[in-house]
Image 1: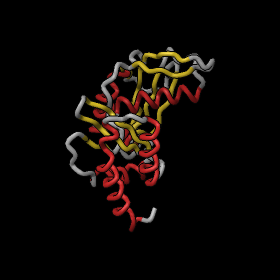
Image 2: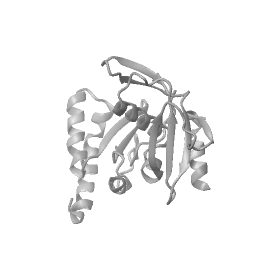
Image 3: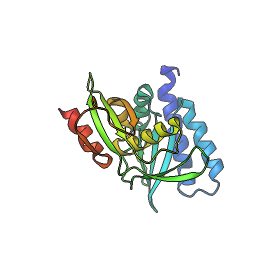
Image 4: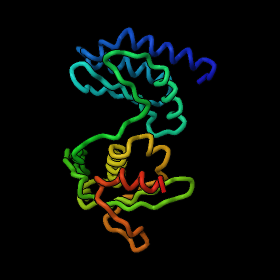
Length: 203
């Protein structure tokens, strides 16, 4: 994207959103609303977006950089230019979520299953430059393919830490069914991940 044109494109986006924001509070045609927002957001690159209804009058629009550090810088610029709108709050990446640690995925037999991550364990390994590796031990993903197992781990980590911490400080993560002797000794339940991750960052 031409950086000289970026401020103009950002201003155009917010002008469009101000004209159309009511359509996203009172959606009558889901597909048309989705396509219109996709067309606007994808003008900036491979971003994704989501709208969350907080209550009948308060909504969040999140513009996600999809895990990319360079796009994170751009999504910050986009949201910094957002207008003050009575019904809306805007976020430049996915925030940590309060959730029950349950999620659904299709297993290798293409059956939709519910999984509970609250019993998963983790260990943290500090790397260089304020980076952290996470090792997650699971006991209930045996019917997922390896790629789907990684997707489950990525989803859970992002739900807990939020996208910004993941992009800036997660070096890597590994999914295992047993901890190895050379893995770190400090092991905790997954609901404690954010506390121990931030504690390691603070030293």
